[in-house]
Length: 92
Image 1 (cartoon, rainbow, N blue to C red):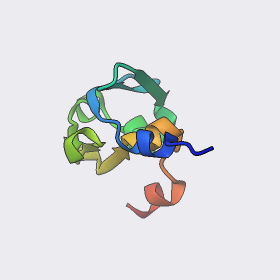
Image 2 (cartoon, one colour):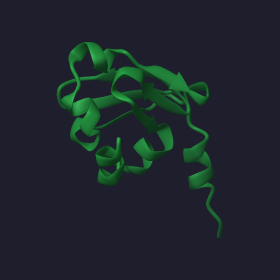
Image 3 (tube, helix red, strand yellow):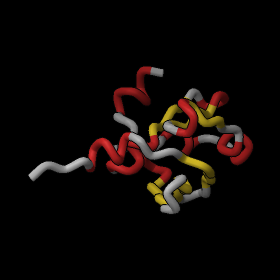
């Protein structure tokens, strides 16, 4: 038996993003809403409300970029439950 789960995950597109003091919340084109703890993304956690609201889609909705925080998060990693690796945070 084969599964197309990874292919399906990789093809998901975001249509809406919001960031609260506790969560990164993403609405997907297929109707799902997914959220992850903001603590998974230290730059977002430490960013101001204004910086958190300053985001752009990348790759036609395959990722999210916060220019003032130098943070990039892929929709695939959100769905798979992968936080920003600590090494990435420390290197920037």
